[in-house]
Every structure is written in C-alpha cells, then in structure tokens.
Image (cartoon, rainbow, N blue to C red; front, side, top):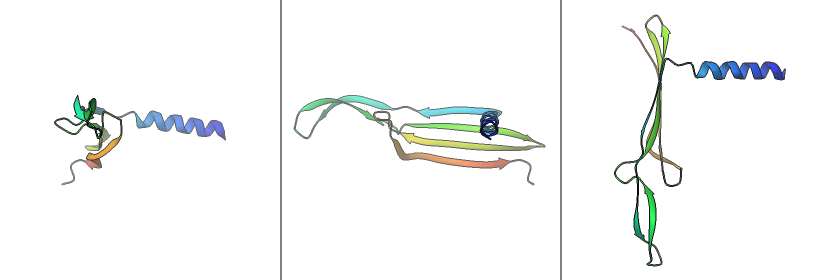
Length: 101
C-alpha cells in the first residue's frame, strides 16, 4: 500500500511540472535609510516597497492538443524585509483557451 502511494505521488509530481511554458516574473523593491523610532532615536531600517509593491508570479501554459490549451497565472505580493505576504498584487487565474467559436 505504501509503495503504491509513493509511486502515485511521484507520478503526480512529475506530471505537475511537465508544462509547455513556465515564466517566473516579479518586482523586488526595497530600500534602507534612517528612520526616527518611538524613542526619538534615529535608526537604520530596511523597508519593503520603496516605489512599488514587491510581488512574485508564475505563468504556466500547457498545450492540450486539438487547438486547446490550459493556462494559469499565480501572483502574490510579498514584503522583502520580513518575507511576509501582502494583499497587494494578489492574482490567481486558471482557464482554458482555444477556438470556441
């Protein structure tokens, strides 16, 4: 039973990464400088999003044959200073494209 489960998981993982086209894209924006803290003392800080919100995205396209293809776009915002996720730039899209008339 365990061998069957492991084989099934390995086959699923191999199939999941067999896309025709995968594009990784994003924006990495951070800055460092002086900031006045609550106690009135200047301190050097690193902040995320100096000019634009940072984000990381993946675009995947798979040809299914006969003029039909599947696509997915997964994009999420992130803070470069602490690695946490943000609500800005969040996009999850999954769909089919083809000659539907």
